Structure formats: structure tokens, C-alpha cells
Image (cartoon, rainbow, N blue to C red; front, side):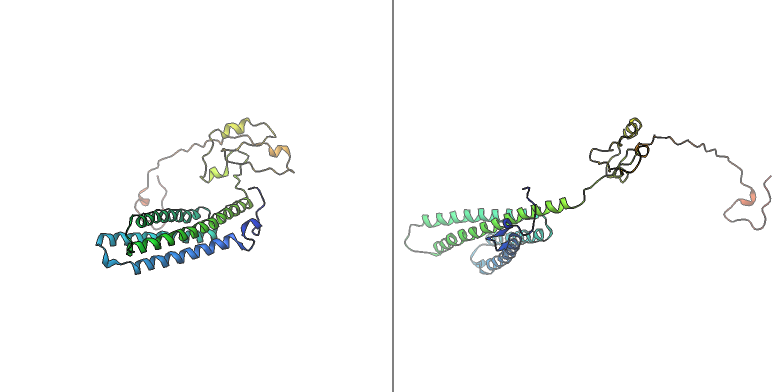
Length: 267
């Protein structure tokens, strides 16, 4: 989308009343409370004494995964909305898509349970299957509405992040007249080996080439003469010769302690 970003655009509102960011925050808070409440109710009302230990362990693992995954997904959603992090919305979407798939499979199992029971007596399994068949589609419908709200908020966050990124000053790697990048000096990029050769062959009045492909040349001031804009020739510094002379140490200076008094000249 190439439109100008504004916080109060009409496309960011649901029914022209509530902003999609606020709606997503309400969805995240509602989902977080729902996850904690459903996990606690499941652990409290599950009939642990009627099943074997293996089934109890499996049920406990399922409740734990549901609680930890739900809390993490909704917490990251709230954090993403407050800090404009588009990628942190993905765990919420993945979690609820997974829950919709699980609800669909469970509802199909409940339909099979009701259809396979041909007796006229309604037992406990039939009651549970009917409750599941009514509750899970409603839960899936609520989750679909939550996903619609979050997808709209994700689109808003993407546009807002792009607007903030474009509003900041661009990252420019200034290039000096000798043809090497400042970022190369700082160790962020590798120095171009051919920079010296390029500087030596650059004609007068032309700018120096960037040291790396991602570097950008800083614009030169307009009031400078052409002689100052031209790159200076590379001058090799003269080498200095160092001569080491070994002299015998006099007896007065041998040892760690300095002698007292006047030192006689060494003969």
C-alpha cells in the first residue's frame, strides 16, 4: 500500500468506532484471561480418579501445553502491539489456527460418537458429545473473529513500522577523499583492496568511488572549488632506518638499585 500513513485513517477502524490496535489489545487480554480460566477449569473439573495414571498424565501434559502456549502467544501479541513488532504477532495466529484445527477434529469425533450409538438410552458419553458438538463450533467462530481483528492489526503494524523506518534518517557510510569507507575503518565492512588504485586513476573533478557496494558517497559542499574536490594523490611516507648500538653497561649501573652520588664517566 502506497498511501500516506496516519493513525486515524478510516481503514484502521472497525465499524468506524474502535481502532484495530485497541481491538487487538482487547482480543489479546480476553484471550489471555480465557486461556487461564479454561486451563484452571479443566484441571479442577477433570475426573482424575476415574481414569488410569497414563491417561491422567496425558491430560495433565495437554493442559500444561494449552496454558503455556496460550499465555505465550497472547503475551507476545500484547508486546508486539505496544512496541510495533510485526513478527511477534505470528505466534498468536499459529496458536489459534492450531486450536481451530483441534476443535474441528474433536467435533468430528463427537459426531461419530453420536452416530455410532444406536441405543435410545442417553448415557454420559452422548451428553459429553452433544456438549462438545455445541461448544466447539462456537469457540471456533470466536477464534475466527479474533484472527480477523489480529490480521487487521498486523496490517496496521506493518504500515506503521514502514512509516517509522522511512521517517528516520537513512544510514549513510561516508566516503573520504582517499577512497575508503568510514564503516570499513570501524570494522563493519571489508576495505576494498582496489581503493588506492581507483583513487590514483580518478580524473580531476570527479568524486571518489565507494569502497564497498553498500556504501554511499556523502554529497560535497557546493561552495568548494574544484581543486579541493579533486582527490589528493597517494603519497608514500618515507621509511626510517633504525640503527641499534649495543654498549656495555658500566659497573656502577649494574643491578636494580641506582648508585648513590655522582657517576664517573665510563672509560
